[in-house]
Image (cartoon, rainbow over the protein chains, first blue to last red):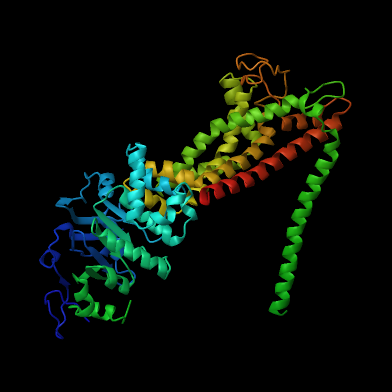
Length: 276
Length: 294
């Protein structure tokens, strides 16, 4: 299908793009918004446009085929692409453009945390994995640290499995446990937004199920944006879904809309399993 | 020739080559240890050398070798760690980095006798350190730095990037991430590199002949004030090491039991270097297990 930007509708009734403003559909305020976001690797433009708004305490999923730019987009949100790629445009976090050079990127990343595709616990004890970033910020009160360890591990639904071996190495845990530990580590610094980059792609189905339950519990306290290649996963856990293709967010709507009556033909083809 | 036959021939050739290497190594070690072992005794390991009469030992040389090794490591490890961190974590791929890398490469291929003569001119003569442990330690630092830097760089490069991202995503700076996550994770490999290079330093002779000197003045092992000339800790005293001692006995030794002492000293040297290698494996393995399973 040829994309003609001048006409919003193609001949067969499909829209070229369909991006909704979530504040029209849910009561939640917008916490993160991108405007004119473009990402370049050298001269190569990886993201052409990503104008999306993410509502508070909701799970937003980014789906799309490999190479569609969904991970690149996500990693730009807390500037993990600094030094790797050039990102232009605005990233408005509660109204503040965090893509400006004078922003304290370390402070910003404590507000916008991230969990990666492969579990990456540090080769330290479980306890130290959680407390490490806090100690670096000068929190040394044992009581505060103990409390944070317990609440973070509880929130990440892994407390019962590890409470008796907090001083053991985190690398001895299973992959699924490691990933939930990484979530606990990310929420220990009390972020506002949690970015997850295909967090279940290295996990078995049982661990994936536990991870999804954990995310559903976490959304009452955190705004979650998750990249997934697994459409069932997006359908199961997310409230809003964005469909990316070839460096563009083509459709963004309530998840139920995306999966039952998408407005863009490519989205339809993708969720129907025709490509990707 | 059928593919199967040519494959068989290739495999047999490779077996022959591999076993030749093992046989040469085993023969060498076996010969040195078997001919040297009878000379080794507690007395041999602890008493000073004698120039004209038999019954001397290698006690002072052995001590000198270890002391020189420790001093060299104290000087070269921090530099190598800094260089390794810079090259692997911070350096951009441009001509400056390429220059640093080729400088390291060239430094590592310099013949050790040239390094020794250079050390003689700079440290012994120009800086006025004289034939001393300090001059020797500086010369050995030149010798050690390239390989240690390389092994630290490789150890850091083996830590997955996911660990770096993990640190940054928690709002830590790059330096905090490197210092508190990457270096500890690379520690087993770094330590292995350090111990292996220690084995090389321990056996080095050519670079030391003109820097640490060829004499081993008597030491008073009850005097630990590093400013006294007879103190074992004095870094400004001349200090013949075990490897230099072996070279010297064989070229100009006039004691009646020169051959036995040379064999014994060689065996001590080889056993020590072997010990370093085994220690490197053991420590690296243990540390890795400690950090991953605990």
